[in-house]
Image (cartoon, rainbow, N blue to C red; front, side):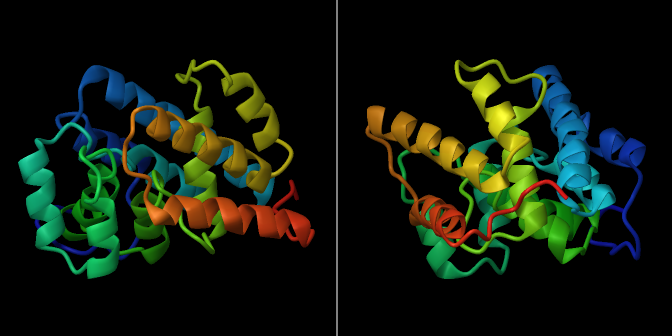
Length: 210
């Protein structure tokens, strides 16, 4: 499973938990389990692949506790396009690095070559325009997992039961407002995520429960 040996099928959740447990602190490990649980629920609600949602959810923060230098080395050794890399590294802090390094680590070290899982981990923090259904599920599961306790989490959970796009808009607003208050860099992908969700709502093409 490790050292770049590609798996023909997705591993079990138990296998994934064994992989991430030594890499994460106790709180992050618990968060990852909560996101996996929430991802399964949202996948079932919106018709996404439940197995892929579970695996992407449990692995989404796999490099979160790695040193910044190690994360950067993983990113630099990958084939992530230069534009995305430059945008993601544009801020003063590395809050976006773990999403990129995590996706690459899961693909190249853990050996999960599934493109859907890669995308769900890659975009779970910033979002992007034209996200897939699975990417949206993981993006929102990270906001609404059982361990989250920020002020508006109740409203986020309510919106997540009504429309993925409504929840995405709320989540992006929360993130951008927080970044602006700290005078941090706002990645263009997040702006595009917001605009894309708004357009889908205006066009009546948002994801509603199936």
